Amino acid sequence: DRGENPTTGSSSYVNGSVVAYDSTLHPPGDAVYNGGFDTMSYAAVAKNVITVGSVTDAVTSGLRDKAKATVSSFSSWGPTDDGRIKPDVVANGEALYSSLSTTDTAYASYSGTSMASPNACGSAALLVQQYSQLFANQSMRSSTLKGLLIHTADDIGNPGPDYKTGWGLVNVKASADVIQDHSTYPTKHRITESLVNTSTPTQSLLFVWDGVSPIRATLCWTD
Image (cartoon, rainbow, N blue to C red; front, side, top):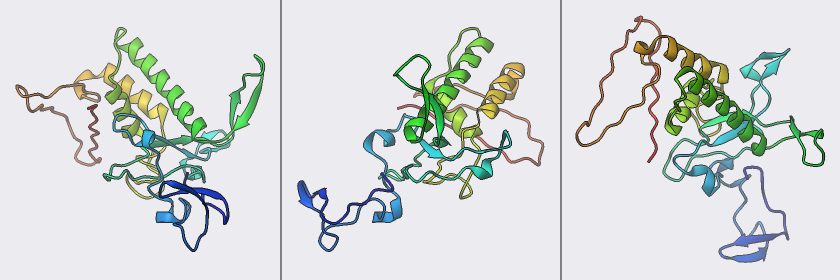
C-alpha cells in the first residue's frame, strides 16, 4: 500500500463514500500521507504473527551481501497505531522463481510481499524440522520461532529496529547455528522456553560473558 496514491478523478473511498478524487478537496494517499509510514493493513499488525516485509535479493556472486538488500517499493511500513515495530523482519521478495498452477513443470518469476512471506515461511519450516530432529521430535513454541528469527536477523538500513525493515533481514543460517549450538551446549542457554505466572513471577538464568562482545537477548511471547 505504501506506493499507492489516487489520481485526479479516480474512484476513491473517502469518509465512508466513493467519490471522484480531487487533490484540492481530499487527503493524499499512502504514498504521500505520513511519508509512506503507517501503511500496514489490519492483518499485518496482529501481535502474535510474524510480519515479513520485502527487500531486493542480497546476493553478490552467489554469496550473501546484506548491503544489496534495499526495501521494495511495494513493501508497507509501520508502525502500528500503538507504536510496535512492524514489519518484524524482511526477506527477498523480488523476482523470485516460483511454481505455477498451469502444469506440473511450470515456473515464473514474481515479486511482492506475497513472495517475501513464503520465502521466510519456508525457511522457518526448515528450522522447525531441524529443532525436531535435534530434540527428539519436540517442537518450538511459535513465540520461540519468532524470537529466533528476530534475534538472528541481519540489521539493515537504520541502525537497530525500525519501521521499514523491522529487526532486519532473515538469516536462516544464523538461526540454524543457534539451534545447533543450543543442542551441543544446552547449559549456554541459547534458547530458553519458560513460563512466568503468579506462583513463579520471575525466572533467573546464568551465562558467561567474555567482557567484550555485546550482550543480546530477545524476549518473545504469545498473548
